Amino acid sequence: VQLVESGGGLVQAGGSLRLSCTASGMILSVFTGDSLGWYRQAPGSERELVATFINGAAINYADSVKGRFTITRDNNRRRIYLQMNSLKPEDTAVYYCYSGARQLWGQGTQVTVSS
Image 1 (spheres, rainbow, N blue to C red):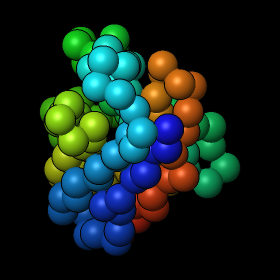
Image 2: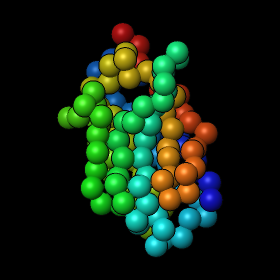
Image 3: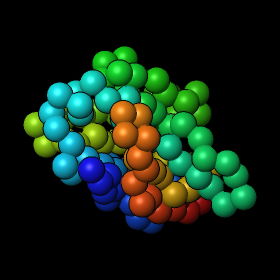
Image 4: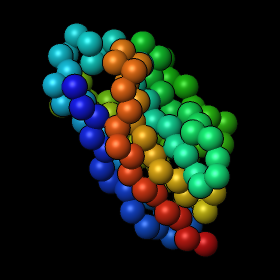
């Protein structure tokens, strides 16, 4: 199983980006029940939770992104998404996809928000 992220980039404050994470090689039954989520790590900071599915159903968001970010999933494509709106410079970080079932991280994708 591999987690492959895409969709990062450079955007101005107030803009939007959508990140994708594909869990290649993961069977459907594992994917649908997996606690898949997004984390981020800014320079000099610890990795932190952004948004995650809990056992494939409930959703948890960090307080700092509530109302701005939305996590969704497409089970048939083995993919999760992170729609990020109203981006702020403090959202700048490397964003990582994580699989709880496999305790596996993706390689990360850089998001940079300019002021």
